[in-house]
Length: 162
Image (tube, rainbow, N blue to C red):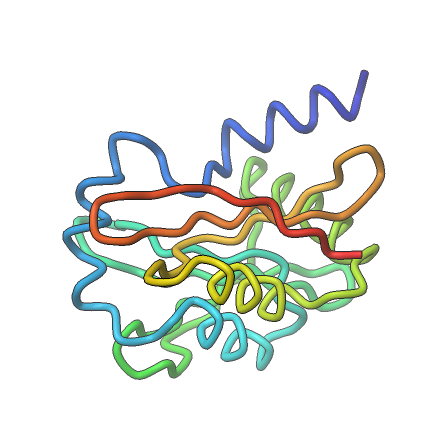
């Protein structure tokens, strides 16, 4: 029961791309020069990447990578034009911290890295680019829900991490 509640909670606070943001994100993705996979790789400088997404924050496109190092979590903002880390902030808010802990649990059981899973999903879906990668446990197995976009069209694929 706890896992079902936690899964519903994580889905509510960490949806890869909300429907109302889809059009805005699609329009802004044109300025993104850095693939999500490269953003994930850049996040490794602050710990193990546990999730990543392009999002609109304060009206601007942002590439956010959650990382884990020991018992600490950070949100790493990667410059979407250069691929360099712009800043890194500790994750301390309840909802974000709960999401980070759940994502870290899934990545802890993974045999495949998040960036490798995203690369595989992109290669299997020609013409699409990844805009988010959110790991979770499904029936005790780690999977990443990867949202892909091609213009304004989007789809989500599940990529096993074990």
